[in-house]
Length: 424
Image 1 (cartoon, rainbow, N blue to C red):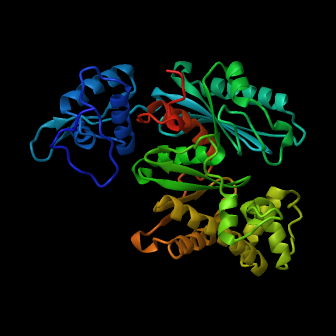
Image 2 (spheres, rainbow, N blue to C red; image 1 turned 180 degrees about the vertical axis):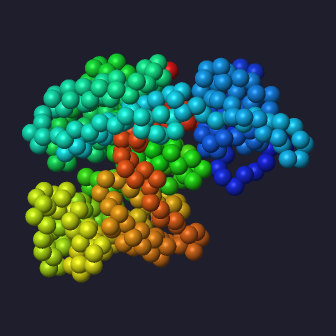
Image 3 (tube, helix red, strand yellow; image 1 turned 180 degrees about the horizontal axis):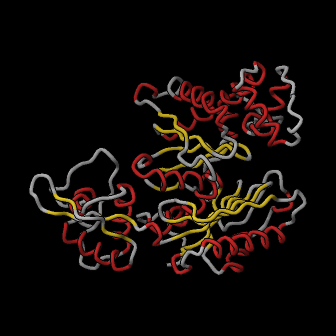
């Protein structure tokens, strides 16, 4: 790799340097694709400025990408100062597609997604409590096949299938101690789905998948390091560091519950961190609220998910006990977020996931914002932003699809835990 052109400017947003070389490889192409993705629409001159590649290198690579159909040119614009026409480029949204699967113990969501993160087709299936592992795989494969067929996307544009599941998982895509569904433990879901679907399959923890989706969809607004706090079956997190997902050695980075327990000083009988109820809010919030005197009056709140939503709604309507319970949950999660900020030195926390209800959003944001800007050791060096996810619905499913795009197009050099995993 050579030094970028000396006249390339320094930008406020993070940039990646390319390599000017005659034998162009996938790294330079990925650098340019990433630059276009973040910008949305961008000129050749600006691509050169942001990447440090010569305009000749940029033009040569763009010709290839345009011929491949990955990019499309917009109408010509006239440069303000020189009066010369320029033709900006953007990603062609239907040039590539991916399937995202979110497997929750109670619900299966399948989404066919284009390069812009738009859902082309979505299917959901309620999962029976007694559904065994083999029937789960058959059901997932059938639902994916149906979604692809109904979407009518060109199968040649389908890059792969991403699967988001609650952790922990094995690095090879095997489910481990999946909460709430012991019948699926040990399921080699990546291998089995790959055999049935005949497409590359990647498996991510749901929090990691959501973070990847946030980065992909968020473009320039998410073009920096951040932690995604994912409220789903428990509270997990996904970490975007140095422009890519951080999976860790075994793909289980981002476990959040014990971090919150350490911050709160909660220990179990063996001296280890106690798994705190507040880090599984869908189960614990109604119980905590009842402890404050909350009485459920909704006859339709017959299961855990409905009881959780009922308490969230009651809190928004001013029920004192429900509001106290929401605040207690938010403060515990906030302490875990403080640990993350201290450990990673980040300045952005993103909140989302299926249990991130709009009725409790303001409390969660305010409590986490207060904590991460009051308690970290280096609090005087930065202001930490706490923001809602741009993926308000189907964060894990769209994120799972985005793992395929991320894996295929994100520039990276070396690093076994971050290496490109799709067959080339």
